[in-house]
Image (cartoon, rainbow, N blue to C red; front, side, top):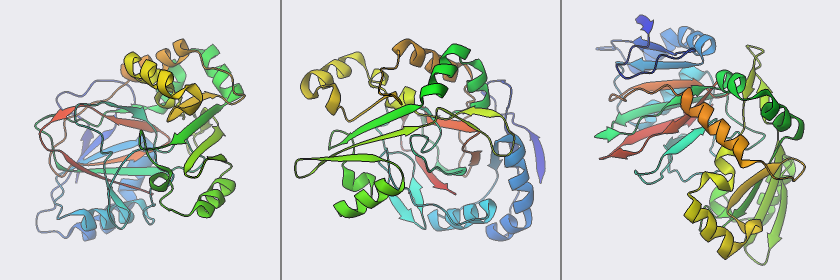
Length: 317
């Protein structure tokens, strides 16, 4: 196995660059390789926050799930309390977010809008797109450090309140909670400190207040860990914002966020957060069978628009 600094041609040279691990598994069973190297792989992910492994040979989603469980050292998690559409394949392996190819998926740490999140996430590229389709990442420590101190202070003092109205405009509650049983939804909300309100016979609204930043349990460093910039209505195109607010009213938007005390978040603060994400992005071009492993607290991820078919799988632990 050869470890080198990540040297993909179009990678941006920023601090905190992850490593590229180039391997040759010709004639070696994939799970045997994973078992023999799991300690080294875990160490590299822990030390660097992100690791791109190139040169593996995959047969499909089942093999990917088994490999990821071995490398992470735990069973893969079910994707519940969802915020994006995905298809479950098997053994808690999912397709990457199924948004239209022309859309950009902004940077985010998985499930940072919740009080439960994975510590590890993996992506497997079975088929790179014809153009675009990168999965850029950004170091959450750098994000935290580069956001203006007064903006950080206000977010950390008040926290972030995520408000969701579940409908076909976004995701229905049956898909988000993976059940059609209202009592099961209520139990989940009670257990996870989510306020809920049934509106009429079938509509649901939830609110949850979470922290804006966290102390990484291994490094002891503060990381920016929230999705305010993504949930806030200002993330939408102005025309779409106006149409939704005019037709639904601000209270009934599919998703929005406020400070934890219910006060409005200044859009200029969110614009700065988005700018900092853009300035710290690390981009690389997918190759077939690339495996990207992330410390979910340390690194955010997103998706660039693309053309042609693109097949990327994901699993969390």
